[in-house]
Image 1 (cartoon, rainbow, N blue to C red):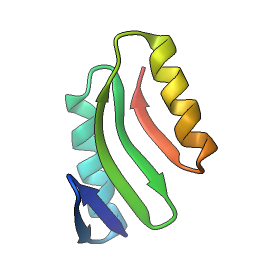
Image 2 (image 1 turned 90 degrees about the vertical axis):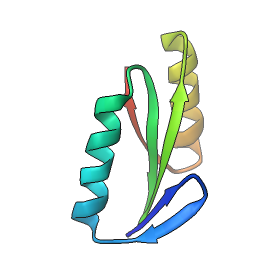
Image 3 (image 1 turned 90 degrees about the horizontal axis):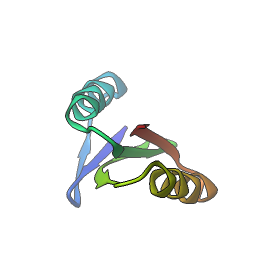
Image 4 (image 1 turned 120 degrees about the vertical axis):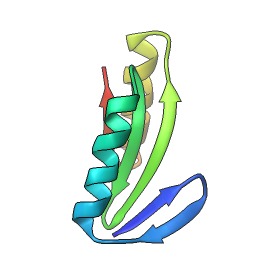
Amino acid sequence: MILVIDGNSYEMPKEAVYKILDMAKSYMSKGIYGVEDEGYLELKNETFQSDDDLRTAIVRYRMKGFRVHCNL
């Protein structure tokens, strides 16, 4: 699986990628911390002031075909 962090790409096993994703989840209070496509995961640090803004961003990513990892 390919992990993208700040424009840098790393290839690693899926288990390692999901461990990093779990760590990112614990540091994000309200926002999107990752978007995933088949064999590809990009870490994000998108925070939002309101739940409506967050839900709008989630819908935009899902319309592009991504699976969104976020904290509401």
